[in-house]
Image 1 (spheres, helix red, strand yellow):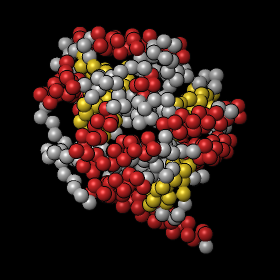
Image 2 (cartoon, rainbow, N blue to C red):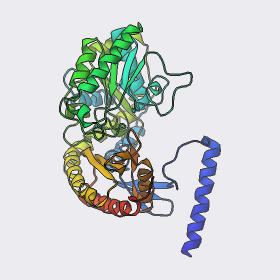
Image 3 (spheres, rainbow, N blue to C red):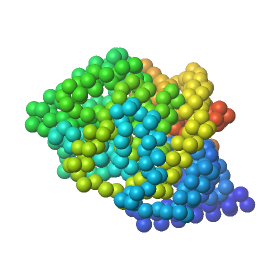
Image 4 (tube, rainbow, N blue to C red):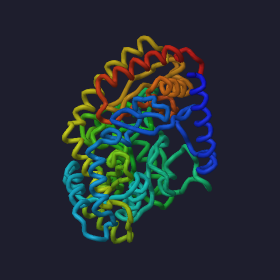
Length: 438
Protein backbone atom coordinates (compact mmCIF):
# COMPACT_ATOMS: atom_id res chain seq x y z
CA UNK A 1 0.00 0.00 0.00
CA UNK A 2 2.80 2.36 0.93
CA UNK A 3 4.53 1.59 -2.37
CA UNK A 4 1.39 2.32 -4.36
CA UNK A 5 0.82 5.66 -2.56
CA UNK A 6 4.44 6.62 -3.20
CA UNK A 7 4.05 5.77 -6.86
CA UNK A 8 0.88 7.86 -7.17
CA UNK A 9 2.68 10.76 -5.46
CA UNK A 10 5.61 10.40 -7.85
CA UNK A 11 3.28 10.40 -10.85
CA UNK A 12 1.55 13.54 -9.59
CA UNK A 13 4.92 15.20 -9.07
CA UNK A 14 6.08 14.29 -12.57
CA UNK A 15 2.82 15.66 -14.00
CA UNK A 16 3.32 18.92 -12.09
CA UNK A 17 6.90 19.29 -13.29
CA UNK A 18 5.80 18.64 -16.86
CA UNK A 19 2.97 21.16 -16.57
CA UNK A 20 5.29 23.73 -15.02
CA UNK A 21 7.82 23.22 -17.80
CA UNK A 22 5.13 23.69 -20.44
CA UNK A 23 3.62 26.82 -18.84
CA UNK A 24 6.63 28.53 -17.23
CA UNK A 25 9.44 27.36 -19.49
CA UNK A 26 11.67 24.30 -19.53
CA UNK A 27 14.41 25.95 -17.47
CA UNK A 28 12.19 27.43 -14.76
CA UNK A 29 14.36 26.54 -11.79
CA UNK A 30 13.34 24.17 -9.00
CA UNK A 31 15.25 23.19 -5.86
CA UNK A 32 16.54 19.64 -5.38
CA UNK A 33 16.82 16.62 -7.66
CA UNK A 34 13.32 15.63 -6.60
CA UNK A 35 11.29 18.85 -6.24
CA UNK A 36 9.15 19.41 -3.15
CA UNK A 37 5.42 20.06 -3.69
CA UNK A 38 4.60 22.39 -0.79
CA UNK A 39 1.03 23.15 0.24
CA UNK A 40 1.29 24.69 3.72
CA UNK A 41 3.68 26.45 6.07
CA UNK A 42 3.68 27.22 9.78
CA UNK A 43 6.51 28.73 11.79
CA UNK A 44 9.76 27.03 10.77
CA UNK A 45 7.95 24.06 9.17
CA UNK A 46 6.73 23.41 5.64
CA UNK A 47 4.35 20.63 4.58
CA UNK A 48 4.10 18.84 1.25
CA UNK A 49 1.09 17.47 -0.61
CA UNK A 50 1.48 14.08 1.11
CA UNK A 51 1.48 15.64 4.58
CA UNK A 52 5.20 15.24 5.18
CA UNK A 53 6.83 18.08 7.09
CA UNK A 54 10.18 19.73 6.44
CA UNK A 55 12.28 21.88 8.72
CA UNK A 56 12.90 25.07 6.77
CA UNK A 57 16.57 25.96 7.14
CA UNK A 58 16.73 27.95 3.92
CA UNK A 59 14.13 30.71 3.67
CA UNK A 60 14.80 34.27 4.67
CA UNK A 61 11.54 35.06 2.87
CA UNK A 62 9.32 33.97 5.77
CA UNK A 63 11.54 35.98 8.09
CA UNK A 64 9.38 35.79 11.23
CA UNK A 65 8.00 32.35 10.39
CA UNK A 66 5.66 30.99 7.75
CA UNK A 67 2.11 32.36 7.95
CA UNK A 68 2.71 34.21 11.21
CA UNK A 69 -0.78 34.98 12.63
CA UNK A 70 -0.01 38.63 13.39
CA UNK A 71 1.27 39.26 9.86
CA UNK A 72 -1.64 37.38 8.26
CA UNK A 73 -4.14 39.33 10.37
CA UNK A 74 -2.57 42.68 9.43
CA UNK A 75 -2.70 41.75 5.74
CA UNK A 76 -6.34 40.66 5.88
CA UNK A 77 -7.45 43.63 7.94
CA UNK A 78 -5.90 46.22 5.60
CA UNK A 79 -6.99 44.35 2.45
CA UNK A 80 -10.58 44.50 3.72
CA UNK A 81 -10.34 48.29 4.16
CA UNK A 82 -8.34 49.78 1.31
CA UNK A 83 -5.58 48.94 -1.13
CA UNK A 84 -4.45 51.50 -3.70
CA UNK A 85 -1.25 53.25 -4.77
CA UNK A 86 0.77 55.97 -3.06
CA UNK A 87 -0.43 58.96 -5.07
CA UNK A 88 -3.18 59.26 -2.53
CA UNK A 89 -2.46 60.25 1.06
CA UNK A 90 -2.30 57.32 3.44
CA UNK A 91 -0.67 57.08 6.86
CA UNK A 92 0.45 53.42 6.81
CA UNK A 93 3.44 53.97 4.52
CA UNK A 94 4.52 57.01 6.55
CA UNK A 95 4.27 55.08 9.82
CA UNK A 96 6.37 52.30 8.34
CA UNK A 97 9.10 54.51 6.87
CA UNK A 98 9.43 56.32 10.22
CA UNK A 99 9.88 52.99 12.03
CA UNK A 100 12.22 51.60 9.38
CA UNK A 101 14.55 54.59 9.14
CA UNK A 102 14.75 54.77 12.96
CA UNK A 103 16.81 51.55 12.79
CA UNK A 104 19.53 53.23 10.69
CA UNK A 105 22.09 55.95 11.23
CA UNK A 106 20.33 59.32 11.48
CA UNK A 107 21.59 60.31 8.01
CA UNK A 108 19.43 57.60 6.38
CA UNK A 109 16.07 59.21 7.03
CA UNK A 110 14.09 58.73 3.80
CA UNK A 111 12.94 55.75 1.74
CA UNK A 112 11.23 54.56 -1.42
CA UNK A 113 9.16 51.38 -1.20
CA UNK A 114 9.13 48.90 -4.07
CA UNK A 115 7.94 45.32 -4.61
CA UNK A 116 11.22 43.44 -5.03
CA UNK A 117 14.88 43.61 -4.08
CA UNK A 118 15.75 43.73 -7.79
CA UNK A 119 13.75 46.94 -8.14
CA UNK A 120 15.36 48.34 -5.00
CA UNK A 121 18.87 47.68 -6.29
CA UNK A 122 17.99 49.08 -9.71
CA UNK A 123 16.87 52.30 -8.03
CA UNK A 124 20.01 52.36 -5.88
CA UNK A 125 22.20 52.28 -8.97
CA UNK A 126 20.22 55.13 -10.50
CA UNK A 127 20.44 57.11 -7.26
CA UNK A 128 24.23 56.80 -7.35
CA UNK A 129 24.29 57.90 -10.99
CA UNK A 130 22.05 60.88 -10.30
CA UNK A 131 24.02 61.98 -7.24
CA UNK A 132 27.44 61.72 -8.91
CA UNK A 133 26.67 62.37 -12.56
CA UNK A 134 28.71 59.26 -13.41
CA UNK A 135 27.92 55.68 -14.39
CA UNK A 136 30.70 53.40 -13.11
CA UNK A 137 29.68 50.74 -10.58
CA UNK A 138 31.84 48.24 -8.68
CA UNK A 139 30.76 44.84 -7.27
CA UNK A 140 32.35 41.46 -6.57
CA UNK A 141 32.56 38.75 -9.20
CA UNK A 142 30.48 36.27 -7.17
CA UNK A 143 27.62 38.52 -6.20
CA UNK A 144 23.91 38.64 -6.99
CA UNK A 145 21.75 41.74 -6.75
CA UNK A 146 18.67 40.88 -8.78
CA UNK A 147 17.10 40.45 -12.19
CA UNK A 148 16.57 43.82 -13.83
CA UNK A 149 18.62 44.72 -16.89
CA UNK A 150 20.85 47.00 -14.82
CA UNK A 151 21.57 44.76 -11.82
CA UNK A 152 21.85 41.55 -13.84
CA UNK A 153 24.99 43.14 -15.31
CA UNK A 154 26.59 42.54 -11.91
CA UNK A 155 26.14 38.77 -11.91
CA UNK A 156 28.69 36.39 -13.40
CA UNK A 157 26.43 33.32 -13.21
CA UNK A 158 24.79 34.20 -16.54
CA UNK A 159 26.92 36.53 -18.71
CA UNK A 160 24.86 39.38 -20.25
CA UNK A 161 23.88 39.01 -23.88
CA UNK A 162 26.15 41.25 -25.94
CA UNK A 163 28.80 41.31 -23.23
CA UNK A 164 29.15 43.18 -19.97
CA UNK A 165 28.52 46.92 -19.94
CA UNK A 166 31.58 49.20 -20.05
CA UNK A 167 30.63 50.91 -16.80
CA UNK A 168 30.76 47.72 -14.66
CA UNK A 169 33.88 46.57 -12.79
CA UNK A 170 33.83 43.25 -10.92
CA UNK A 171 36.42 42.48 -8.22
CA UNK A 172 37.62 39.04 -7.08
CA UNK A 173 35.39 38.00 -4.20
CA UNK A 174 37.25 37.62 -0.89
CA UNK A 175 38.03 34.01 0.09
CA UNK A 176 38.88 33.76 3.79
CA UNK A 177 39.54 30.03 3.61
CA UNK A 178 41.99 29.81 0.69
CA UNK A 179 43.57 33.25 0.94
CA UNK A 180 43.54 34.27 4.62
CA UNK A 181 46.51 36.57 4.11
CA UNK A 182 44.48 38.72 1.71
CA UNK A 183 41.73 38.89 4.31
CA UNK A 184 43.99 39.99 7.14
CA UNK A 185 43.20 43.69 6.93
CA UNK A 186 41.24 44.19 3.71
CA UNK A 187 44.22 45.79 1.95
CA UNK A 188 44.04 43.50 -1.09
CA UNK A 189 40.34 44.21 -1.48
CA UNK A 190 40.94 47.94 -1.08
CA UNK A 191 43.72 47.84 -3.67
CA UNK A 192 41.40 46.06 -6.12
CA UNK A 193 38.80 48.80 -5.60
CA UNK A 194 41.37 51.51 -6.31
CA UNK A 195 42.42 49.72 -9.51
CA UNK A 196 38.78 49.51 -10.61
CA UNK A 197 38.28 53.22 -9.93
CA UNK A 198 41.41 54.07 -11.94
CA UNK A 199 40.17 51.89 -14.81
CA UNK A 200 36.81 53.67 -14.86
CA UNK A 201 38.52 57.06 -14.86
CA UNK A 202 40.90 56.01 -17.63
CA UNK A 203 37.94 54.95 -19.80
CA UNK A 204 36.25 58.30 -19.23
CA UNK A 205 33.37 56.74 -17.30
CA UNK A 206 34.01 57.72 -13.70
CA UNK A 207 32.70 56.13 -10.51
CA UNK A 208 29.13 56.33 -9.23
CA UNK A 209 29.56 53.81 -6.42
CA UNK A 210 30.08 50.33 -5.05
CA UNK A 211 27.35 47.82 -4.16
CA UNK A 212 28.03 45.17 -1.51
CA UNK A 213 26.18 42.68 0.64
CA UNK A 214 27.81 43.42 4.03
CA UNK A 215 27.82 39.68 4.82
CA UNK A 216 29.09 38.75 1.33
CA UNK A 217 26.36 36.11 1.47
CA UNK A 218 26.45 34.84 -2.11
CA UNK A 219 30.22 34.91 -2.02
CA UNK A 220 30.08 32.24 0.72
CA UNK A 221 29.87 34.59 3.75
CA UNK A 222 33.64 34.54 4.41
CA UNK A 223 34.95 35.40 7.87
CA UNK A 224 35.62 39.15 7.68
CA UNK A 225 38.04 40.77 10.15
CA UNK A 226 37.00 44.01 11.80
CA UNK A 227 37.43 46.97 9.46
CA UNK A 228 37.80 44.76 6.37
CA UNK A 229 35.84 47.16 4.13
CA UNK A 230 37.34 50.39 5.50
CA UNK A 231 40.06 50.92 2.92
CA UNK A 232 37.83 50.01 -0.02
CA UNK A 233 35.01 52.31 1.07
CA UNK A 234 37.42 55.15 1.80
CA UNK A 235 38.74 54.84 -1.76
CA UNK A 236 35.18 54.97 -3.13
CA UNK A 237 34.33 58.09 -1.17
CA UNK A 238 37.61 59.81 -2.02
CA UNK A 239 36.66 59.28 -5.68
CA UNK A 240 33.26 60.87 -5.07
CA UNK A 241 31.32 57.59 -5.24
CA UNK A 242 28.49 56.31 -3.04
CA UNK A 243 28.34 53.15 -0.93
CA UNK A 244 25.31 50.89 -1.42
CA UNK A 245 24.61 48.16 1.15
CA UNK A 246 22.38 45.36 -0.13
CA UNK A 247 20.73 44.09 3.07
CA UNK A 248 18.33 41.58 1.49
CA UNK A 249 20.12 38.69 3.21
CA UNK A 250 21.83 40.01 6.38
CA UNK A 251 19.20 42.61 7.28
CA UNK A 252 16.36 42.70 9.82
CA UNK A 253 18.47 41.17 12.57
CA UNK A 254 19.55 37.95 10.89
CA UNK A 255 23.17 38.18 12.04
CA UNK A 256 22.03 38.39 15.66
CA UNK A 257 24.46 41.08 16.77
CA UNK A 258 22.91 44.02 14.90
CA UNK A 259 19.72 44.86 13.04
CA UNK A 260 21.68 45.48 9.81
CA UNK A 261 24.69 43.80 8.29
CA UNK A 262 26.53 47.08 7.68
CA UNK A 263 26.23 47.92 11.38
CA UNK A 264 27.83 44.60 12.24
CA UNK A 265 30.88 45.19 10.03
CA UNK A 266 31.13 48.85 10.98
CA UNK A 267 30.26 51.28 8.19
CA UNK A 268 27.47 53.69 7.33
CA UNK A 269 26.32 53.40 3.72
CA UNK A 270 24.84 56.16 1.60
CA UNK A 271 22.07 53.88 0.33
CA UNK A 272 20.55 50.71 1.82
CA UNK A 273 18.45 48.23 -0.13
CA UNK A 274 16.27 45.49 1.31
CA UNK A 275 13.66 43.02 0.11
CA UNK A 276 12.43 39.50 0.91
CA UNK A 277 12.41 39.46 4.73
CA UNK A 278 10.57 42.75 5.21
CA UNK A 279 7.22 41.40 4.00
CA UNK A 280 7.52 37.82 5.32
CA UNK A 281 6.67 36.51 1.87
CA UNK A 282 4.51 39.43 0.74
CA UNK A 283 6.21 41.32 -2.13
CA UNK A 284 7.59 44.46 -0.50
CA UNK A 285 11.08 45.96 -0.68
CA UNK A 286 12.72 49.34 -0.10
CA UNK A 287 15.59 51.74 -0.65
CA UNK A 288 16.66 53.94 2.27
CA UNK A 289 18.97 56.90 1.78
CA UNK A 290 19.69 60.51 2.75
CA UNK A 291 17.37 63.43 2.06
CA UNK A 292 19.82 64.98 -0.39
CA UNK A 293 20.35 61.80 -2.42
CA UNK A 294 16.62 61.15 -2.61
CA UNK A 295 15.93 64.72 -3.68
CA UNK A 296 18.55 64.44 -6.45
CA UNK A 297 17.04 61.15 -7.59
CA UNK A 298 13.54 62.62 -7.64
CA UNK A 299 14.79 65.51 -9.78
CA UNK A 300 16.55 63.18 -12.24
CA UNK A 301 13.88 60.47 -12.56
CA UNK A 302 10.11 60.72 -12.54
CA UNK A 303 9.97 57.47 -10.60
CA UNK A 304 6.67 55.94 -9.50
CA UNK A 305 5.84 52.39 -8.48
CA UNK A 306 2.14 51.49 -8.66
CA UNK A 307 2.28 48.73 -6.07
CA UNK A 308 5.33 49.75 -4.02
CA UNK A 309 4.33 50.80 -0.51
CA UNK A 310 0.62 50.25 -1.06
CA UNK A 311 -1.48 50.17 2.15
CA UNK A 312 -1.52 46.35 2.37
CA UNK A 313 2.24 46.02 1.80
CA UNK A 314 2.95 48.74 4.36
CA UNK A 315 0.66 47.10 6.91
CA UNK A 316 2.39 43.76 6.40
CA UNK A 317 5.85 45.32 6.73
CA UNK A 318 4.78 47.08 9.93
CA UNK A 319 3.51 43.77 11.31
CA UNK A 320 6.88 42.13 10.62
CA UNK A 321 8.60 44.83 12.69
CA UNK A 322 6.03 44.20 15.44
CA UNK A 323 6.89 40.50 15.57
CA UNK A 324 10.65 41.10 15.51
CA UNK A 325 10.27 43.38 18.54
CA UNK A 326 7.60 41.48 20.48
CA UNK A 327 9.24 38.06 20.11
CA UNK A 328 12.79 39.40 20.56
CA UNK A 329 13.87 37.57 17.43
CA UNK A 330 17.20 39.37 16.96
CA UNK A 331 18.34 38.07 20.34
CA UNK A 332 17.02 34.64 19.35
CA UNK A 333 19.14 34.75 16.19
CA UNK A 334 22.20 35.54 18.28
CA UNK A 335 21.54 32.78 20.81
CA UNK A 336 20.40 29.98 18.49
CA UNK A 337 22.99 30.85 15.83
CA UNK A 338 25.83 30.57 18.36
CA UNK A 339 24.35 27.33 19.71
CA UNK A 340 24.04 25.85 16.21
CA UNK A 341 27.60 26.73 15.26
CA UNK A 342 28.73 25.20 18.55
CA UNK A 343 27.09 21.95 17.46
CA UNK A 344 28.39 22.22 13.91
CA UNK A 345 32.10 22.77 14.64
CA UNK A 346 32.73 19.34 16.24
CA UNK A 347 31.43 17.72 13.04
CA UNK A 348 34.69 18.81 11.41
CA UNK A 349 36.51 16.32 13.67
CA UNK A 350 34.42 13.47 12.25
CA UNK A 351 34.02 14.51 8.62
CA UNK A 352 37.08 15.26 6.49
CA UNK A 353 34.95 17.04 3.91
CA UNK A 354 34.37 19.99 6.27
CA UNK A 355 37.03 22.60 5.59
CA UNK A 356 35.66 25.50 7.60
CA UNK A 357 32.60 26.34 9.69
CA UNK A 358 31.48 29.97 9.63
CA UNK A 359 28.58 32.38 9.76
CA UNK A 360 26.77 34.91 11.94
CA UNK A 361 23.51 34.52 13.82
CA UNK A 362 20.98 32.56 11.79
CA UNK A 363 23.11 32.58 8.65
CA UNK A 364 25.76 29.92 8.99
CA UNK A 365 27.20 26.85 7.30
CA UNK A 366 30.34 25.02 6.29
CA UNK A 367 32.73 25.01 3.36
CA UNK A 368 33.07 21.49 1.95
CA UNK A 369 36.30 20.27 0.37
CA UNK A 370 37.64 17.18 -1.35
CA UNK A 371 40.99 17.56 0.37
CA UNK A 372 41.78 19.68 3.43
CA UNK A 373 45.42 20.07 2.42
CA UNK A 374 44.74 21.38 -1.07
CA UNK A 375 41.40 22.92 -0.03
CA UNK A 376 39.92 21.75 -3.31
CA UNK A 377 36.20 22.69 -3.38
CA UNK A 378 33.62 19.90 -3.22
CA UNK A 379 30.57 21.40 -4.91
CA UNK A 380 29.35 17.93 -5.83
CA UNK A 381 29.30 16.85 -2.18
CA UNK A 382 27.48 20.04 -1.23
CA UNK A 383 24.84 19.26 -3.85
CA UNK A 384 24.46 15.72 -2.53
CA UNK A 385 24.16 16.95 1.04
CA UNK A 386 21.37 19.38 0.17
CA UNK A 387 19.44 16.67 -1.67
CA UNK A 388 19.86 14.04 1.03
CA UNK A 389 18.87 16.51 3.74
CA UNK A 390 15.70 17.22 1.76
CA UNK A 391 14.84 13.49 1.85
CA UNK A 392 15.33 13.51 5.63
CA UNK A 393 12.97 16.45 6.08
CA UNK A 394 15.40 19.39 6.21
CA UNK A 395 15.50 22.06 3.52
CA UNK A 396 18.79 23.90 3.04
CA UNK A 397 20.99 25.04 0.15
CA UNK A 398 24.49 25.81 -1.03
CA UNK A 399 26.28 28.94 -2.16
CA UNK A 400 29.75 30.47 -2.45
CA UNK A 401 32.38 31.21 -5.05
CA UNK A 402 32.73 27.52 -5.87
CA UNK A 403 29.18 26.43 -4.99
CA UNK A 404 30.52 24.30 -2.14
CA UNK A 405 29.38 26.19 0.97
CA UNK A 406 26.40 24.76 2.83
CA UNK A 407 23.94 27.61 3.40
CA UNK A 408 21.75 27.42 6.50
CA UNK A 409 19.43 30.42 6.75
CA UNK A 410 16.21 29.54 8.60
CA UNK A 411 13.31 31.75 9.68
CA UNK A 412 14.10 33.85 12.76
CA UNK A 413 11.98 31.85 15.28
CA UNK A 414 14.33 28.86 14.76
CA UNK A 415 14.91 27.21 18.14
CA UNK A 416 17.74 25.31 19.82
CA UNK A 417 15.74 22.10 19.37
CA UNK A 418 15.41 22.86 15.66
CA UNK A 419 19.15 23.47 15.45
CA UNK A 420 19.92 20.20 17.23
CA UNK A 421 17.66 18.27 14.84
CA UNK A 422 19.28 19.96 11.83
CA UNK A 423 22.89 19.35 12.94
CA UNK A 424 22.14 15.77 13.99
CA UNK A 425 20.64 15.05 10.57
CA UNK A 426 23.56 16.77 8.85
CA UNK A 427 25.98 14.60 10.83
CA UNK A 428 24.28 11.47 9.45
CA UNK A 429 24.26 12.77 5.88
CA UNK A 430 27.90 13.84 5.94
CA UNK A 431 28.77 10.33 7.15
CA UNK A 432 27.15 8.99 3.99
CA UNK A 433 28.61 11.38 1.40
CA UNK A 434 31.81 12.70 2.94
CA UNK A 435 34.02 10.12 1.30
CA UNK A 436 32.30 10.22 -2.10
CA UNK A 437 34.44 11.75 -4.89
CA UNK A 438 32.72 14.82 -6.32
